[in-house]
Amino acid sequence: MDRLLTDIADGMIRFEDAVTQLADAGHEAGIATLIAPRLALRSDFVTELLGGGAEQPIALVCRAAGLSPNGYSAILRMRRRKRPDHNVAASVLLAAYREVPRLAPIELPKQLAAIAAVSS
Image (cartoon, rainbow, N blue to C red; front, top):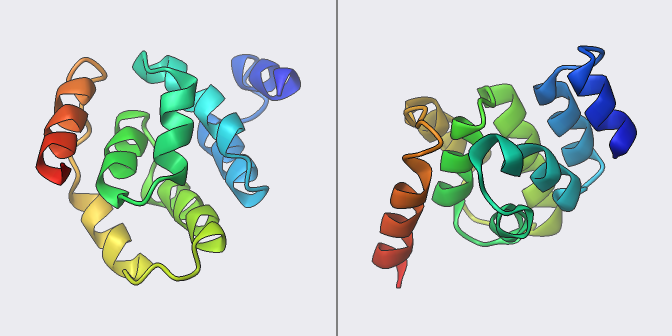
């Protein structure tokens, strides 16, 4: 993981490519390690979102982190491998992702809290 972080910092690999590699390997904690600092979130919180059931919070986090639909698609593939019983088509989720506005990191906690309040 340290090597990957160094490669990103040195411009040897793009952030999104690193996220895709980690998603393809099913490495939720590694993805969280990359995304959390960009958004001033705790890594364990992002890991929990990645493994959780709801799609909207992780879509917000991925968009705020700057992932394109391709990067988000890698996250969806990883989640599908871990939860094959999921009933929403990836194409529907990708279409919805394209409509998610890119939030400033400072706005993200408020949006996530609003989703949690509605879900409770």
